[in-house]
Structures are given as C-alpha cells and as structure tokens.
Length: 330
Length: 272
Image (cartoon, rainbow over all chains, first blue to last red; front, side, top):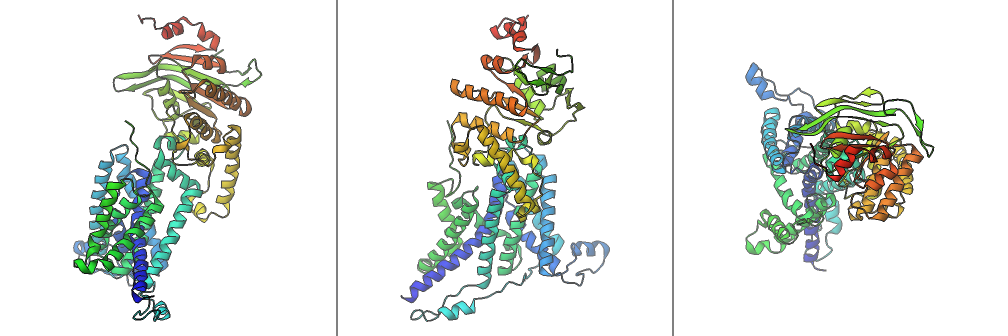
C-alpha cells in the first residue's frame, strides 16, 4: 500500500473527529428546535459564555471585576484561589441551568404562541446580550482553557504506525480530538437513551410533537422548556470546553455556531442522530476536499465547502437526511 | 333526581354516586361572542354523561372549560366538593381529569406504547437525577407503570400495534390509542370529545363497547360529546343539551328525547 492511501485514511479520521466537534454544537440547536420549534441563534454564544464561565471560575476570577472597579474605584481581579476542574465544571453547569431558568422566565414565557420568526428574533437579541454580558462578567481578553485533557499529537500511535509504507511517517491524530470524539459519543448515546427510556425524555418528545396534548396529560410546558434549555446549556458547555481547549476561549468561539448550520441542513433540524451523521459528513467532506482538490484551486476550501454542500442538499432534500419528511396537504 | 345528592342504582346494576363535578352558572365569552351563557349542570360519580347539541352550541368549549384550556368569565366549578381555583390544564390533569380530542392529538412520531406511557406522567414521581442514574427507583417506577400500560393495551386490543409510530395508524386505531392514553392516567373524570366522529358503523360499535366497558369495569366517570344521537341515547345515563350556548335540556335519554325545546333545536324550528 502506498503512503498516499494511509494519508487519506488519516485525513478521513481527522475529518470524522472534526465532524463530531461540529455535531456537538449542532446538537444544542436540535434539542431546542425539537422541543420548542425555536431556532436558537444564541447557541454558539452559549458555548462561548459557558467556556468563559468555566475559565473564570477555574482561575478564581472575580465576576464583574471591571465594572466593580470602575464604580467603586477598587482594584479587584482574582480571589486568589483556583477551583479544581471538576468542581468548576459543575459550577459552570449550574450557571447554565440558572441561565435556562432566566430565559424561560423573562423571554419564552412572554412569547408563547408567537410565530417562530418572533422567537428567532428574540434569540438573536439574546445572543448579543449574552456576548456583552459575558465580556462584562469575565473580561473580553483571550483566555486559555485547560481542563487537563492531553493535547498535541498522539506519539504512541504515530510511532506504532510509522513505516507501514514507504514515505509514511505514521498517523498524526490529536489527543484532544480523540478525547472530544469519545466524550461526544458518550454524550449523544446518553442523550438518546435518556429521551427514549425515561419519563422526562418521553415528556420532551411529547412536547416536541403536540403542545396541547402534552398539557392534557399533565406535562407543564414551562418546566420542559427549562429542562430543554438546561440540556442545551450543558451541550454548549461541553462544546465550549472542547473548542475552547482546542483554540482558546475568545469571541470567535461563538462563530462555530455558523459551522453547525450546514450540519443541520444535512442532518435535519429535528434529528439527534442526524446531527451526528451530518457533522461527520461535513467534517470528512471538507477535509477530503481540501486534501484532494484544495491544492489545485488555491486551498482554504474549508471556509466554504460545507455551505456549498448544504446548498446542494437543500435543493435535493430540503428536510435533511433524517428530518421528518415535509408534506403539505393542499 | 338532579337536585338530590344521594346515590342510586341503575337498571343494569351500576351505582351512580354523588356529583364529582358541578358547573355552576358558567359563562364564557370570546370578545363579544358568548360561547356559553349561564350554564349549570353536574356530573355524578360513575355515570356516563353526554353533552349534545347542534354545531356551535358550545359543547367543545364546555369541555375545554372543564379541562382548563378556557377560563370562564363567570361561574364556579366544583370538583370533589371543592371550589376549583383557576388552574393551568396540566395542573387539572394532575388532579385526575384526562381527555381526548375531537381532532386526534397524539404524539405522532412516538410509538403506541410511548404514547400511552405519557398518560402515566402524573403518576411517575422520580426526579430527573434519578432518571439519569436510571438504576434503582427510576427503573422500578418505569416497570411498574409499564405493567399498567400493558393492561390498557390488552383491554383495548391493540397489542399488534404496540411498537408502531401512531402517525402511521389508520384513523380508527388512532382514536383508540388516544383513549388508551387517557385511560392510562386512571382518571377520576374522563372527557371524550366526539370519540366516534368520522368512524364507520363497525368502529363506532367497538368504541361504544370500550366506553361502556371502561365505565363498567373501572367505574370511571365519563363525560362525552357526541354527534351521533343513536349512540348517545344508547350509552349515556344522563344527557345535557346545549343550543347557542344555552342549556335547553337535561335528564335521562328518554326525558331529553321528549323535550320540546330539544326537538325544536334539532329539527331547526325558528327561534322566537
């Protein structure tokens, strides 16, 4: 076998892992869209906010330090302690759950029965509010996130596979990517199991299907919304940790939400497995395209490939791969 | 008979108890339109109570008032001897009032089994953390409730479609699954909104039999709306007749059948 064959496999493996990272973000969208028909524009910012909160708590930053300093003329910065990663993650999760309560109480509750476009606009407002609020709370500088996951290439794998072909120096796979993939798989499997086999999971699906019927069997819509937004907050936190550990916690983190859009087009807005498969197709597709065709057309194809692929899908299969078929009766 | 609170025994040997639900002078308005005006009636424990009337008489509105989708502007609702405060529909469901809908409202993407399991929602008490851990209380509770649901499935003779997504079922079966979901809640009061609408004769007979069996075997109190007069007169103990949001008759099927106002309403005599 030639070295090129192994390099192609390496590209596919990297593509799959990148794809899973996209799926993590897309998953947050799917959860909220399924349960409330809202396209949550703020999902990316939620991931950013969650990651900022995690770093802030971990490093013992004083929240709103800048604001407090300006008003009271103090010089607060850090509490001077460091919170262990595990506890910091739990605390960040609690913050995201608190956020879900606030969203339900002050936004969703007042917009019941409005058109989806109104709710969409509300989430745009929410996104910008959160972005500013996050900066105010934790400061806007680029932060480094270290949750103790191994970084860099996997040396063992590289040396073990080196020399499988002439001119092949072994598979280069990033440790963090592999961890992220494993965590994402566990997360998705548990989410699917939860929604299929528990009372709350059934209630989530019920609300997604028919609000009135759900009410009539005793399910409180407001409770379900809080649960859904908490779950989306949890997924955002996981995505924020993975992406933050990879490329630092900074504003551009919120833009990964844009990468989730083509994933959703492919997978369908209402399917959890769809988000996963969609992410993988996009991930592998863009890496392979860049590897095989990129050099001939000047590279940087990863910037647009996903969107063009999504466009093609929209033309031929508007409901996505796994979405419920759109049938309009006339 | 209506005025008394004592229980009595019907000809076929069922015991009809004191009123479980009393509607007192209910008035419901949508803007300037009065859907229900000053209507009072009661539903007794263990009886099958029908609400009939021509289109637009306010029957469905009345059911929606009982179930909490609508809140009347005037009047009182008494449930189990207590005056009910204005409540959300899900709170009323938790009190033991289950219902079906005129235009089937099932969870279409979910299987028959899952749909009926949602009917057990108010009876399942484990919290989300326990459910996430799954082993222990959540699993026990799930199995316990699953048994009850399987019983309902046997009762309604729908074993064959347990795993089928209900969106794929024919209309008559969907109606039956919806009844199953309401039954699974083991309600104190079961509301049926046109349970036989759009069915053929055979399906209607099946449904009538199920309604009678539910009432007979479990002693469930049932209030139903139905258009098919033959069916209503056959299966109900007492009938209340609405027309243009007003009550024009109330009593046993025989009494109602001979009521001049009811005959006029159904034969379309001009209102004075």
